[in-house]
Length: 88
Image 1: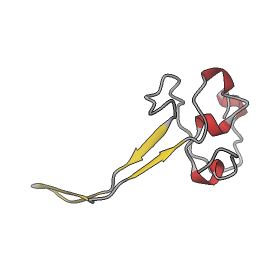
Image 2: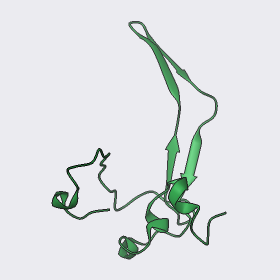
Image 3: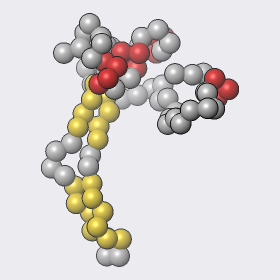
Image 4: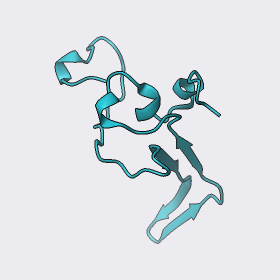
């Protein structure tokens, strides 16, 4: 995570998103939800929603003051949270 755009390396391909500093929480944990949809037509509009989705949780309780020191409270990525001692 960076505080300023000047901290972003320009010689790499990256995905950048704005951090939401007042997120919705479930039991004190940040989360994200993914729904999978298929759009087969726009005129007429035909959208299919897959029955199953995905919810990912941070492995430690959210605390805005720990934004730089505790990625496990601020990110929901499995590849990061699996290293936390609180990961289930």
